[in-house]
Length: 126
Image (tube, rainbow, N blue to C red; front, top):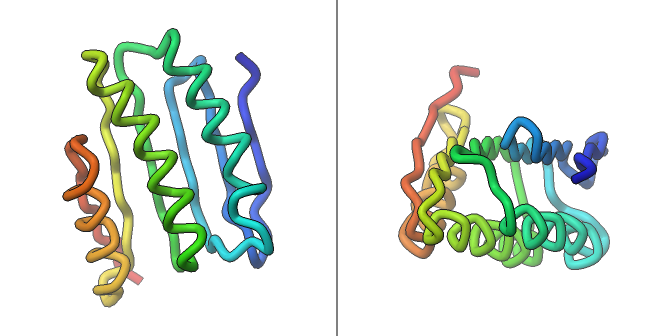
C-alpha cells in the first residue's frame, strides 16, 4: 500500500499513514474548507489497510484545534481503527494535548468513550 503523506497547512493537519510501519499520525489544526473531502482518502486508506494490518498499529493524534465537521470525520477514522482492533489486532492510540488545553483532553476522552480502543492521554508541556 502506498503511504499517505500530507504536509500540514494553517487549515489542514499534517498526515502520515504508513502501512509498512503501522503508523498513523494526524497533527496540527483541522479546519479544512471541506472536511469530508479532506478525510475521505484517509478513511478509504484505512478500509484497505484493515484487510491486512500489522500486528500493532500505532496511532498518534496531536491536534491543536479541530472544528465540528472535522470531529465527525475523525470519528470515522477511529471507527475504521476500531474495526481493526475488533479483528484482534493491537491498536494503540496516543492522544496528545497541551497541558492547559482541557478541551482537547476532553475531546480525547469523548472519543475513547465512543470507540472501544485503549487511549493513552499524553500531556505536552508548552
